[in-house]
Image (tube, rainbow, N blue to C red; front, side):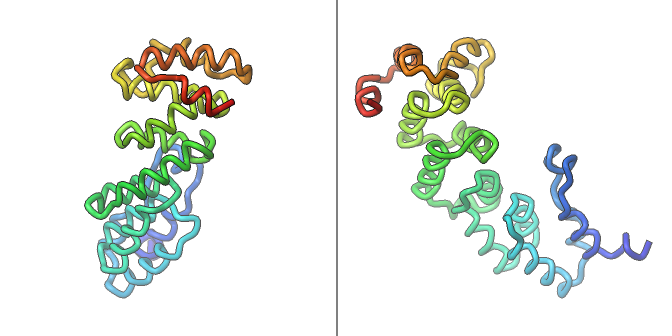
Length: 210
């Protein structure tokens, strides 16, 4: 009982993320923060600021603490390469975000990350934030990236151009799946079809990828 009533112990225990917490997106015990003394909260704040690898839950908790040091850490997370961390920071400090920095981080992820290495989260972010440079990276990726990524890029391009109801519209799934090929000729054929649907000139992209 004594241990369960200790808010610091409760909070630190909640920072241990098992499969269930990861799968269900369960955050840290934020209620425990409110039960701490000022000195206890400062100690936990330091733990969160120095926690590696940085998790979106760290940002959520720091935003709840809302001290000058915590706010600075949340703002710094706007430049995180982890899209989940970046998105959580955006929820609390969107007015501090630099759209150019955000665009660069997204483009880098679209070019290099795989679906289980941050790309799926980036795709979710792109559904809400897609300046021309990001859309251009999607078009290039639909032609040049590996099949699994290209499938999702094609789906997202259809959605962003108003040709699909959602970011992965299952009504168009057979078309999207055609991008999952390592055969260059087949990829070019379906890429041309996509460009015709969304109103993009494929010539430049095809010429650059040769």
